[in-house]
Each structure stands twice: as C-alpha cells, then as structure tokens.
Length: 174
Image 1 (cartoon, one colour):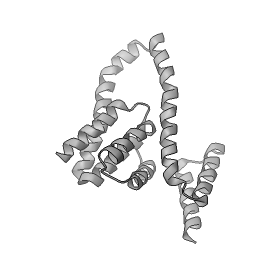
Image 2 (cartoon, one colour; image 1 turned 90 degrees about the vertical axis):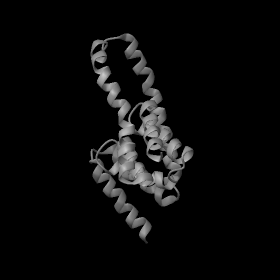
Image 3 (tube, helix red, strand yellow; image 1 turned 45 degrees about the vertical axis):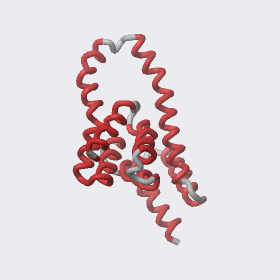
C-alpha cells in the first residue's frame, strides 16, 4: 500500500508540476513533508542538497532519495517511475503535435504566459529553502559569496559547490 501511495504521490507531482525540477520543489515539499509527513523539513533540505550535487534532474533525484528514505530500494524505483511516467507519456504523444504547431501564435502566447509563473515557482522554492538554510550570519555570508561567484564568473557549478563546502568547513568547524 505504501508503495502505491509513493507512486501516485510522485505521479501527481509529475503531472501537475511544470517548468523543471526547481519549479516542482514547492509541490514536492507540500506532498512529502506536509501532507504525508514521510520526511522532516530538515531531511527535505538535505535531499535537495544531495539532489543538486548528483548527476541528473533534481526532481528525479529528489524522488529517488525520498522513495529510498521512505521505503528502501523499491521505494526509490517506484517514486522515480511515478515522477517520470506522465512526462514520458506526454512527450511521446506531444512530439508530433509540437512539430506541427510550432509556429502557432496560441502556443507561443501560452508559453510566454507560463514563463513568469515558472519563475515565481522557482522564487517560492528559493524562499522556502532560504528560511531553513540561512540560519545565522555565517550561512548568509556563504550564500552571498556563492551568489556573487556564480553571477560574476563562469566557474563550473561543481567548483562552486566545492568552494561552498570548504567555506562551510572553515566557518562552522572553528
């Protein structure tokens, strides 16, 4: 029963979240932390961090980690299948029609309307994560330095993560 619940929860997340993994984070949080209470908010933040550092889309990685935390290896498989099923079906069907209607004014207008909403969802996810992550002056300092480095340079994200980890080691160990 738990595996079915996991599958259908992540299927719902996959069906009703548009705009990529970061736009899905508020819905993932609502479902797994608030509605089902499968994990704590602190664990959710840790899963997001791990999902960002591992290869692959953040929504799939998050589903995999949550599924594993809740129901082991089978839970991770079921959660991952749940989050990708709808997209797989829709993309398989829609490819033909997207090519056919790629010049449609209606389609272009809808996509233009969705972009600001997706940015809003990403900002919402950021603010939710920021409340838990920026807990003191040290964590705020790390966030500001990393944001500056990311915005002003072409440094690879993995190097930025390593810099943040080293800053955390220096600032929180002593």
